[in-house]
Length: 318
Image 1 (cartoon, rainbow, N blue to C red):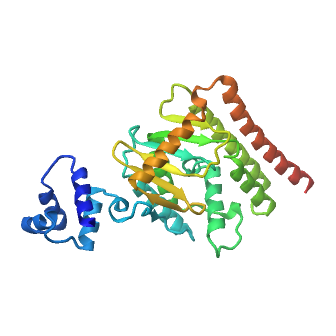
Image 2 (image 1 turned 45 degrees about the vertical axis):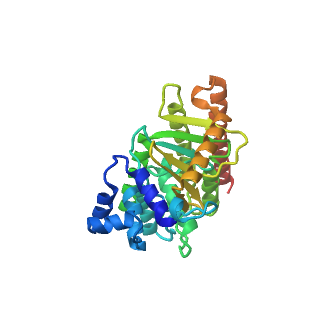
Image 3 (image 1 turned 60 degrees about the horizontal axis):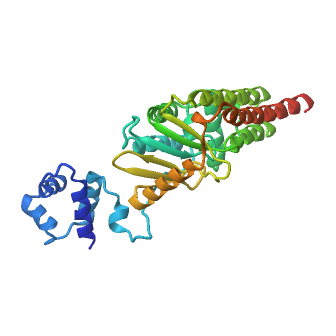
């Protein structure tokens, strides 16, 4: 049964209608006759051969080898060190590079937190987010102040590649009034813990305001590559769906940075449909009236100022 499903899937992926027997012969490095026997189901693919074929044809193993109610996923590696973080970013680049970095690729982001792509850069806020991630994920890490924390080259290089990809694709982000909360709470937490100076804490708040201002400037009717939606009721979860005309990938978080990744056709289609439904029930701020748009962004600025004033007060009276 599984061999028949695999052959059917290869036929669907054979867009140029080349000889499937010849293709399988080349991929597996076997004779034409041996390939013919496998395609005619007179002999079976080995496990190694099946893996080679699904990799070559870009077939989701979920659809071939799993029951309807099961989904096969990949997962990102656990992060316990700077090197792990660099490897995580590199692996993310490989996953995304399966899609063209053009407007033909769409990314849908359910932004429980500020999207990862905004906080991987060379500025102060990006450095702080890396500091936070390693403090929370590296179990044996000794307490280190933000001021003594140093970025390392491979991490920076991989971060910039991810940011470049995101800048070039068609982006659809769903935010609500809590999207910026966790980053602000992290700033206050590390300031109160004595691991972040008041000067840098205040500077980080200003850096957040600059980021929100940058997003506000992108959020205009004529920008057909960036779409910011405001949803008052939806509980966001940092799910990310990447899609082009040929395939879709769903990234589902299971830890702070850890993701399950699936290309299962039904799952990704359902996720796509869910995103489309939520977009219809959201307010597209690009095309909203000036009042609605300003209310959303002004609330964000006011919240940042509120946290900054807490830091200033604590420093003055501490």
